[in-house]
Image (cartoon, rainbow, N blue to C red; front, side, top):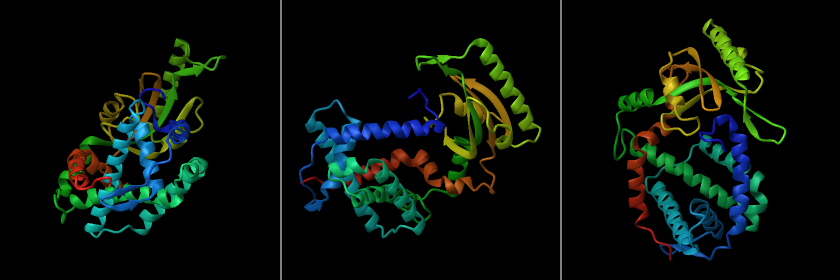
Length: 306
């Protein structure tokens, strides 16, 4: 992947993930039966965490991979147990998201899951636990939680550390006859730059970016509002800073590395967009993620693989 890989290249990223999972599962032996604090754990769930350990530390010894898998498994059990202890429950919408995710993963990886003893119900448990963790985070910092955070403070953090935008991304590279990525000529770069400046002017004259930038060659349009925080790795380094100094509801063009951008900055505080509500969990993760990780580590310490 190109450094600072971008959202519109997620299709390539998904394909790479497919290949990685195939390799990971094919390299993992079937797990032995595991118990956590005396309770039996599905072989398929344990196989999932063995694969995760293989992905995180591929060059480590088998004993180190097993130790990491055990740690991840204990964390999974701790989160599930805490979810029950706090008497939380999934909404219908959350259950639908989980179902869609599981169906997508199963469609892509069914053969490799089944060959390694991972069932669809196992995947469902894994995806449920991911949502449980988000809900535990939100609950902890809610008004009635263990560590309440003022909503005004959180909104301030959101407006200062997140940006919202639509964008057109052009590529300053092309592919030669050997299938290799090569830079555009200086003349081609100048032509693209001039074209992007012209498109930017049209947007700032009142034309929607969705219409102005539709069907532009060698470019990808993100016509839905994208929200990222300042530490996002989805766009090249420097992208956040370039957009954050733009005016709300205005477009600007700029280049970074092998990319040329037209970005229309949305007002992240616009109540009609409802962005804070939609990205509240992501905001909490950015603000309190490290603190919450220590809390989860504390829960996890009470569990051990037998």
